Image 1 (cartoon, rainbow, N blue to C red):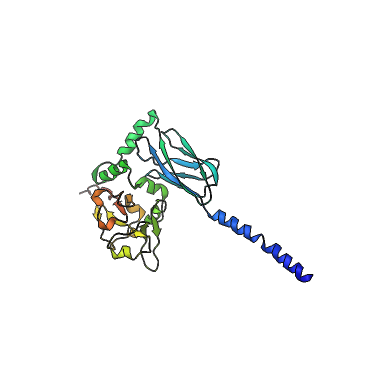
Image 2 (tube, rainbow, N blue to C red):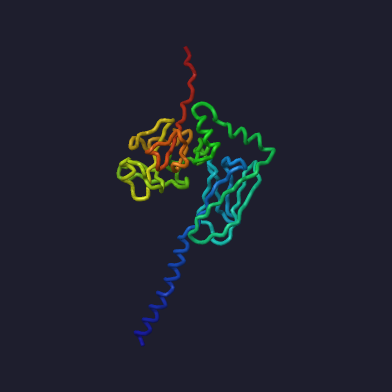
Length: 268
């Protein structure tokens, strides 16, 4: 009798563990909703509020119009978007545990805000930054401006890439430098790319229009206060012809540094 009672108690205690583990597994299967916000001309809309209706899950689109919302509740949800100067929009989607769902918004502008949009598009479109702003208007790739850097206050330049879809930041260890990689299969002959883990492909860099020979530059070498703007191209289909070469097949980061302030002539 005593033995049977002990077995029954053991079963009673152990049985709830199975559904508890399943529940934890379901919680770990995070739902991610990501996408882009653009205007009717296809130009990225930065600074748009994007959120899941009825929840506190809210983000702001970056300078490339991209957004990502983690830990979205399962079921049928409404993704909302709003930006001053545009008609608000929303989309209903159904998601379940483990889903990663893309949502694209195309916002209609309000007539009374057209002048402000034109001024924003032309900002900085002169001098050495002219090509940056021209490519940003086309919208192929990810573009990070000085305004976004100041808004985010990242502790390091590498942190700016944490929210770029398709790019993974591998923190340096044992004296190694931080690396930016994509999930593409490397086709480069570079030993640096071949040494990476299978499935990871190391991105290369241009700084102020000059190609950095693989292995001679890392993102750790520039701090956020040194950066004026960044362009991110995640594969050959995004890379402009001007930057395309064999070593950039895994993706490319183009960094534009800030110009020093103009100094007035010293008094004689």
